[in-house]
Image (cartoon, rainbow, N blue to C red; front, side, top):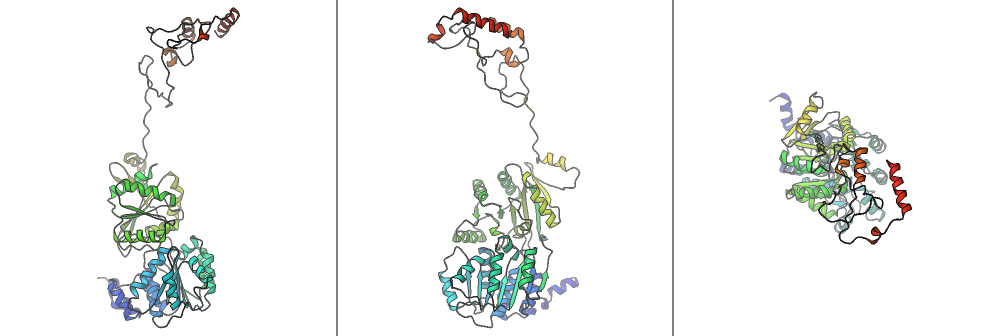
Length: 516
């Protein structure tokens, strides 16, 4: 064992050395954790000292426990008052708020602390009763909290500890004005903790405005993927749904989150997977909260294998053993790529991520690779198997042609000869000819009309004229000398049997002479 490994395994580097209460350490031990993650090891001591903290770490690194554990220790000494929560955690989504509440339940089960959860789409009768008695921890989304505050159902003057979780996501979803208003209402605030996967300028300005001499902890550069995740770009053709099903089959993927950019795409993708015999469900913002929570619970328990979702599930969905993530669409925001694939490869486990790219996604892919500062390996799903292609390989074009990435053009069918009895309706240029009816057999009786009274219709072209290779002036004169045949059956219209005046007959003959 190396000296570094000895330091990590030493007892003083574990949770016990941080000064957490025995009740909290007991709950941590029952969860099977013995060593904190880097963000937890750095942040927990400062939070216990009541220092403002900015924590920057990619998703899946244990940010939630880095503030829930020390908050439980702080809140264990004190008493809540009616309608005045002692601490407040702001979450951008319902799912993340629910996951944070579960952390407090798990790690605070041996402490006599109360908690309330304010999120949209859920009946709040029980939560209101809890708030009436007073809660130690209030977890809420910004919109619902402002609604309750304006109705006088919750008072914010007693909040001492504020946590802004996933601050960059707050900005992406347009919640920054609500967050700023809420922070300005917390007159009794003594400590502010801000956690984020990235630090865009807008989040930096928020931190500079509301945090007091914060300690900034950065355990990973912004917009970097976890080392435990192996990600690939899948070259998709025009039919992405077919490529998706083929990818799942050939890679042996048994469980995955499949991310789509737009809600209108989710239904089609889910139904295609279901028709392929896969156990798939959908998850997006238009669903009722109870339906979304039921789907998440089924997916977490293994009752659902494939979850087709928008970015509403990119944050806050914590499945400990998530083997794979598939981006059906390249994320519109490059930072979301990190958040999406961060759902796999968690807690030291290996994970895989596949991003499907069509011709229209090249610009979005370039943005992802620019922000993450890496070239992602390409994977072509062909009929014979999967091949990984290196972008810098000079033989890449040959490999793509061999594996079927570019569909080879089918040669045009040859044009049949003029004497072919069944010519193809498709010419060399690929355009479909109009079907032409041939003349009726000479054996069938047909009314005969003088050449001066009617002409052969243009559609009834002779084979010589149809092939275009032997027709000339001689052919036209020979055709005119023949009596045109019009098939009307047994009943001939009366106007066809009327005599033609001599002056009209002479004019028609003169017209034919001019044409020649």
